[in-house]
Image 1 (cartoon, rainbow, N blue to C red):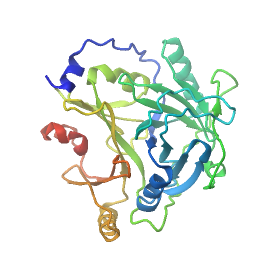
Image 2 (image 1 turned 90 degrees about the vertical axis):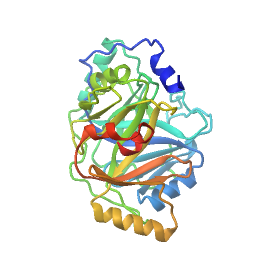
Image 3 (image 1 turned 45 degrees about the vertical axis):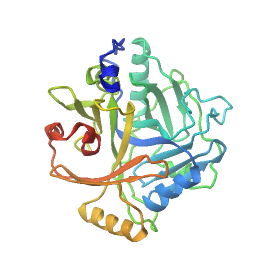
Length: 346
């Protein structure tokens, strides 16, 4: 029996989730990842991937890059085993600064603060354990873990003018403080931007549109699905008949899926496999591949099939980032892919 099979077949206490909770999740907004060297990773996501630098929190060794789609597509946090403290001096309570590269959290954009708070209240009533609630200056954020232990942030933006506080400064200072969703009257403004002003680092060999979707290895579809469906509020697009994988997406429906959950039938780490960034069109992919070759940047893997055309890069910590153009939606096609390759072909 493989390690993966052992994980799947062990008796589990399946968390009970109230289907009424449902955060008003629109789409994935960003990936916040732990990296080993902030300046080195910042140079990769900015100078190679083309995301515009929008600021640093130097005291906690964090940096942010964005293409203009939202305040940040990637948050980069240098992992060093040390807790982080906000501008109010209080420790940010998630205890997952493990000192190694990997996912910190996936940030999910919701409709507005009012709906975010209402879901939080429903969650409290249902007995859900929230890890922390924070005010990041430009967003209100609620954090919790999925059943496999991966951290997810559900957030609502405070303003459409996020560049007012994400100024591209060498050091923004500390921008995060505690927040009590039960105090005050939440606002109904919908501060997500329908038609963003895309900006890029022009000297980069490539430019993506946005962080678009992610792929996770999970212990079992049945075990994690109630979280993603009933708490995260994502629509189930497709579940494989053998429950080896499932596709889900938020209400913005910007592509055929926002997250693919793949049962861990290989000896992989549970949770985050990679983030995928959408390109404008196939010419943009052509140009990116040619420019990367000229710059001497190796492409880790190319995918070219009926459903998508994409390529993967490895960041300085060997974390995968995919750049893709979607072609045809065919959820069932993943079943024909070798099990150990499904995360790449999702």
